[in-house]
Length: 254
Length: 293
Image (cartoon, rainbow over all chains, first blue to last red; front, side, top):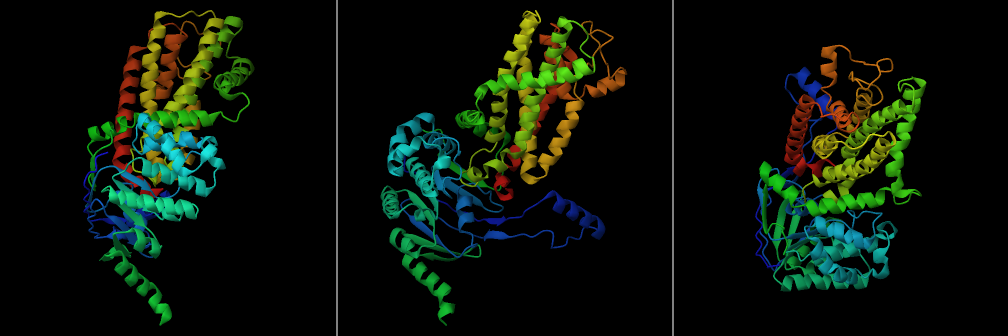
């Protein structure tokens, strides 16, 4: 693939609500009785991300840090187009490869090899393109003969390795990873880490959400600190990590 | 190399309808994979495997034939009449099992693929489409049973058999539309499955599967129960497109007639409408799916 230049700039506001028929019904009744007045109890709007402005360029490895629920995954999912934006817009140049969680999209009854074809196709590869890459994918995943066993027999580590291997071999221009480098054993992690360096070298973009400050400082060229859906800090990874650690551990020491 | 969009812009704006059709069409290979994957998984652990595609409609037909043909005495006497009634039931059963099977599965096809939907962005319509195609495969196997019984009853192919591909195509369009609507509802309301079950049960009894609704010279008057003798009632009854599909198939295959043109026109329009509306509402809200499941 051509190394397209990537520019992501967007403003996003995103709300999440669980709606059941009962709630809708109750809300309707509510509206009848109160003549249009809406009780806040029945509709809770949660803005997982608010006014996020971010531009990421090719060659950057961006780390996203932040406590649980700060919007890291939401941001990645919005970038991947999985969650539609409620406000603002997202612009991505090039093919996106993403891995939010490990192999959850695999079909349990099919073999690993069959799943590579299904997943590759969903990721936008043609049958021929998958066939060209299948050997490299299997080799990288280190699954060996297990590749022809049904995926239901895989351990979560094996699924994660296969998922990661597919994601990097589709030659994405933008790779989105959510906590992925915690998968697999130490040697696989090291290999996966070096892949990130290769991505950076070939002018592609990687965005990682992680809780591992070590990883952020070691692999990233830039870091963003998300706090309750807003960008708190954007800059050099070691400075962001330092500030983030100071904030989260500071109160305990005091 | 790849046909994947080189640049994609997503915002709060929903892509235009032709664009949504184009994106779905670009995913035809994925649909093929999903369909063959679920076909492989479907009968994998069964002793009789894909033979069930033949046995299922056959067994159900025999059950209904026993109950309604023999116990209720609807088939009339003699071998010829029996086989005719068996075929009558078979066509109904097979068609109904296809449509109801698709609708049943469609209600959960988005929630069932939650993992994938939260991982990658793609046109979600591939799921209801592949559900429909998977069931279509079973349906086509079932037609083998029909042809076997046609031969058994001494009914040889006529020119009217040529209507079959067209009729199947129209039915596919209708079912696809219904699947999209049900899949869409299934995302926003987890209760869809419960409602669907009741509605399908009602449709089962309100469609002419094991009783006659149309006076035909081939149906002996003493065995036929024309539940709907009254003209207005009959018209209302036939508004059910599923009932129309039964009758159209029976015209072409069993009675060796030209399918009733007015019924054919009505069914075509309803199917086209169902598909257009179904795809429009499904694809308009698919970007919200990930938030609700």
